[in-house]
Image (cartoon, rainbow, N blue to C red):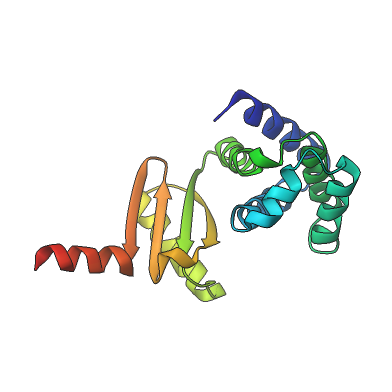
Amino acid sequence: MSDRATNYAAAMLAIAEAEDNVEEVGDELFRFARAIEGNDELRAALADQRIEASRRQQIVEDLLGGRASATTVGLVSMVVAAGRAGEMSKIADRVVEMTAKRRGHDVALVRTAIPLTADQHDRLVAALRHAHGSDLDVKVQVDPTVLGGIVTQIGDTVMDGSVRTRLSQLREAF
């Protein structure tokens, strides 16, 4: 990760700690970063330096107002006003990693085709913790390109249980 993303993440984490809502802010930043990753038009608007910073901040407030904590709205607004919206995913991922590391956890990034129910999420977390042998912070991202199943990344290890991969393996076997 770039030093800039790490510096922004450290500052954001310090603010979230001062506000005593690290978990909430981390989750909201992660979800917002995934949302702008999946929306080219939104990402372009937030990163467009020709649009006044106040207008880009208003877009953030309109999107997140009532859906995220005031701390998260303020932090995202700051990043957007500074012209760093293009780095939002890196910054959010770094916040998640730093938060997990402080608790002695690893991060599992899980991509699914559809949202998981609470029961599915709980069973997935338990299975990943058992398989990994340590505490994990599990972050789930809905990714329609997965088609079915899940893809999990813990550090450099990727476990691909997607339908696409299974079909590819069957094709190769024939």
